Length: 147
Ligand code: AMP
Image 1 (cartoon, rainbow, N blue to C red):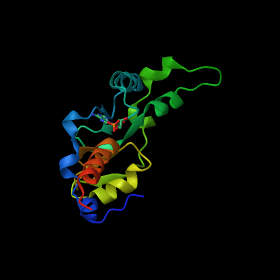
Image 2 (image 1 turned 90 degrees about the vertical axis):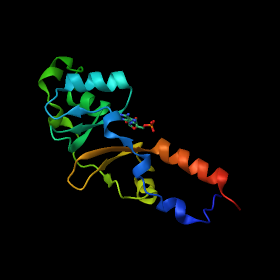
Image 3 (image 1 turned 180 degrees about the vertical axis):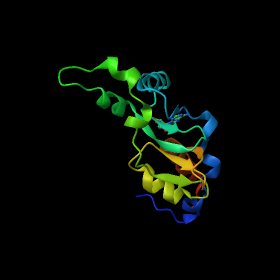
């Protein structure tokens, strides 16, 4: 069993481990579902943030959300993609972190999710904290820790 003697690891601020907004693939409110599907497919990410014109975080969009939205009774209705807006189908109830939060808060959320969005006080999207980044830091910490 891993025991963390010095809990300071948990209190590390997340700020320097955030993937910054400009490097995060996203879609904009008002984009259609066809565009979103293209971005999701091309990037290979399963879920991406939805931002408004002021770069504020409005929701998350996943491949599954898009597919669900065009699921007909007998087949997938691809022809509906251009008419569906991202903001009609995105998930809006999402957990976020602040840039001032610590690894501890990040960990709580990243156990169940591959990434979490980070926002400024006014809702401006700062970037994302991924499970991969946290695990990398955790591995570094465990390998370097003095017992
Ligand atoms: P990773 O931990 O790098 O495998 O990323 C986990 C998830 O975080 C991915 O499936 C995406 O949903 C999201 N993600 C990671 N990096 C990016 C990025 N640069 N742009 C958008 N989403 C990302």
